[in-house]
Length: 220
Image: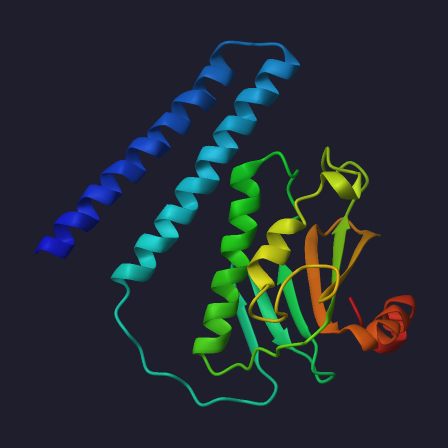
């Protein structure tokens, strides 16, 4: 009963946060504002929705009953609404996110990306997948998007650090320059998503070869 009562309290708070977001959206629709003001309000609303989503995810995890663990497999594939994890035949880890990297100034967005990757890796591991650990890794982030997809066009404006934060300590010891090399890439594509590859640093040349011959290698 105490657990149920605590869950209800959290649900009421989540509902309050959602109602606040709905009111902000309604205000934008009913009371026209300047383009900049509308964008600022949308950013605030998106920030709140992303944080609320993370909070709801955590609540789901704490209330979900335990389930039996499947047997481990050498080549493991884990899929969810917000992304999927694959241990490739090369031994590289591939993470696909069904979203793009947010602007680094959107704090809720970067936290959302970190939370998504962390949960995907947790489910991958809990279901029998093996997460490799590299003493020095090459992290490649490849965004697929059209030209007019977002305001963050410069690499230094993209929230790629949210990816590093979710992976360090699990696939490489730390994200400093001695233990991680980083590559940021973009592919023109109407299907917006983000492909993340983590591999040994000495195999970075193989990655660039596969990237240059996607049709030949079945690479994304």
